[in-house]
Length: 206
Image (tube, rainbow, N blue to C red):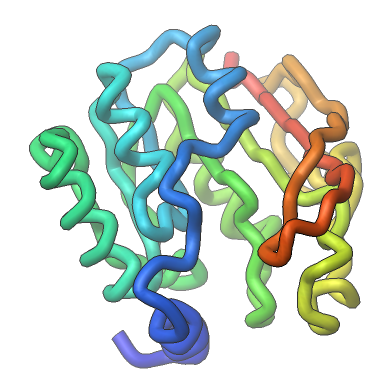
């Protein structure tokens, strides 16, 4: 795979042996125990923190990312934790391809990129893979952390209602179970303290 998205993320992952914390995203850990299901699609799985958490909590996981480096790191960690057999790691440029499903849950945690992409269109296609009765869970940054690089701080992070509107889903097929914003304390790479806003979007397919 050789395109702008792949190149960007390969360069990002080449910066350090580990980019992300390896921990499950906090909002996911709060919300998912209330969701019934067996099979989940993890969009932009990175180094596998969420995918491994899902597998450790009884889910069968399809975890996708554009970066081959990220997928290799995720698979290695899943193997160490004894859950690799429950995770199907797949390489996808989600602007071009998407696993077919159906999935009881589609999870998009902080699915942002500085490389230009039609994010609403990707999430719309992802929603189409949700099984009847299933859930689309999107957790977004409400804004950039103050310690983020300048290009990130200038990135536009749409509010939760706008994200839902941009998905252009059939309101007869989807229920807005939860669409809100929540603050959480966070610590930057050099110990900086700040309050960050997460947009939490939980939609249920009828």
